[in-house]
Amino acid sequence: MHTFADMKREVYESQKAFAGEKKPSMQRRCVGHNYTGRMIYMVTMVVEGRRPLFGTVAGRSDAPPGSPDAPRVELSELGRRVRDEWWGIPRYYPQVEILALQMMPDQLHGILFVREKMEKDLSLIIRGFKTGCNRHYREFFPSVPPAVPSVATESQQTKRPRPKDDREHGLLFARGYNDKLLLREGQLQRWLEYLSDNPRRLLMKRERPDLFRVQRGLTVAGQPFSAISNRFLLERPLKLQVQCSRSLTDDQIAERQAWWLSQARSGAVLV
Image (cartoon, rainbow, N blue to C red; front, side, top):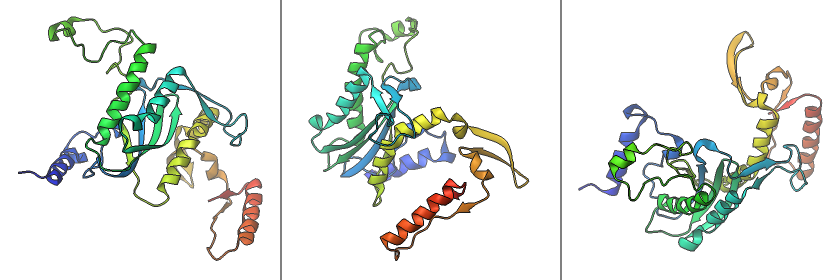
């Protein structure tokens, strides 16, 4: 008789990189983890086809938080419906507390806290959330047929022509989702900062696409390289390491910070 741990090991063995096809990040789960217990998760889901259905990003990447031009996502009506479904998860699962949500034009990132052990695992919670979102989606896109017709026979399904706007699954979200487990001190705060910074990063990519594309055939110190992002950093000869000892006072840290910033304004790269 197989135990639960044995089953998880079998899943792990069957999904190793050298044992078969590599699985997309939206379809991987943490091997050996019980998704019904107390845990904080960061969940990412993308719109099928990466269509920007949830809204548009607005503002400037260099605008300070709280200013009129601060980076933000202005939600569409569908985006607002999806937002409300996410914050409404505790109505169906009172063991779950919603900690954060960041909507993007073609995806969402959310943090939830399973406060106590549940009968159902995380995947069923996400499935229920997606089902609620699909009801709203079909209000806006009524021509998209159901993913599984309830009346047509198998032969009729085969012969029926596929509509032009029918996607692979006929659903709002792409198949699966990505989850991350909270395992270390300080990780939650980094997640929250990552979520809130998403609109700014997207604006940066649009404002400076040259910083986010792969560049091949670069020569640095006589060696060929491929690179992505801030290539101009390679051309700055002065790089200063930013490091502070715990023994420094607040005044000493402020003094060093002012000095580093002055060097950066003169062209130095702070590392």
